[in-house]
Length: 231
Image (cartoon, rainbow, N blue to C red):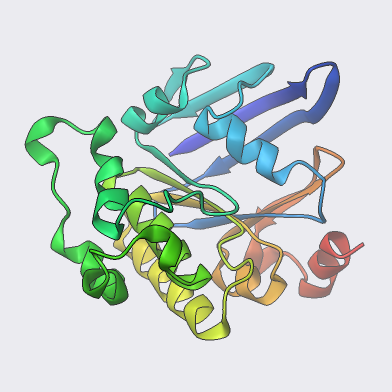
């Protein structure tokens, strides 16, 4: 689904990512792991178009893509759930979901039933303002909004951050469901090791903006991986 080769990224004169190469396949969860400040969020921004990459190639379904805007990447099927959620606090839950229509043709601009099946709490709170929701409910709203765009590639940046345990479990169940459907590739950036490890089909470890370990989770020793992401 997604293939990246030698991707680099700068903020001004500061280089953040160094020749990052990775793949993410449909029907799989690819976890990007590492300590704080190693470039995980920058990688998500480069893939989503939120921050332009400096170099390297990115292809989606074997189509090489130039550097595109976030809106254009969303139209290509890339959905990004950023760290911090970034929902609109003064808009209702339903209005937040409807913002996902922006990259869709007019004839498919509707909230499908399965969104509320995945996140039942949102159906009951459609008229409530986003800013009045708990942190866990806002995270569910952010993921639901991304799914409205009908993505082929879903990027999740720290979805468990600041979330209560029962909501973390629900989000994990949703990720498993989406993976098992087999229609999208999922890239998960996550500091909560057990959550990531239990969901991952493959893993990419970043240190100082470069890939230091990658491969199928079944072929990587758990303690070796834990040592790489906790130092």
